[in-house]
Image (cartoon, rainbow, N blue to C red; front, side, top):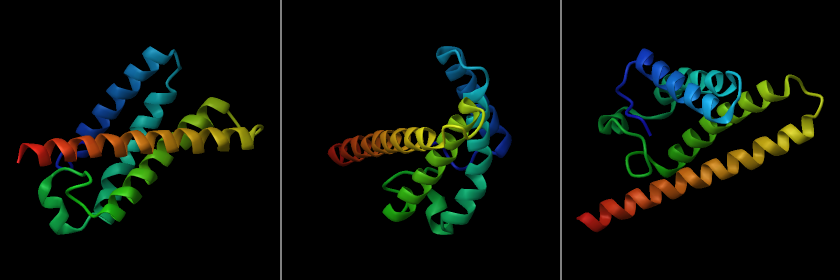
Length: 130
């Protein structure tokens, strides 16, 4: 949901700050920081690949500014990058692959539904203010 006009180094600093805050609050040792920095590193090339030029004029990515299919693809891909990184770093291996896969699927589904719900609330607020 961040503006797409930020330079990469600003995105990386935001990812580091958010990840560090989550690590402090969750008492994890750099796992969230690594996942958030990787997510922010992958974000801009993925936006350049997925979002068309006329859609970039809005400087935001949400349900209203890009097509619904693009938004779903963008959101699910970035959520999966984050969840796979967090699960892999937490497990330190693939000994419990099926449990890790279940965790990734459940966490990604809940995250996607929360992001979609947030976008629906924003759309309703924008439409009701018009």
